Length: 83
Image (cartoon, rainbow, N blue to C red; front, top):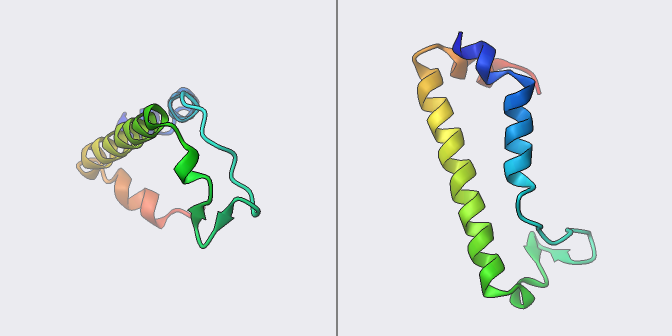
């Protein structure tokens, strides 16, 4: 039953909506050098806090899902599946 919820389209829509809740700067070849966004000094402090918050929310969500999935062997199927 857990697998059915994990692979549900509504769940992935929810994750996408959480990711899109904050407007991140557009990353291009011109403004990213050596994996660092060149305009990082220009990002307002409030936006930095929002970015950190969304990263924490998503990390906790993924960790929680994988921890719950461990008992249902979903983790193994996720790791063995081809992307």
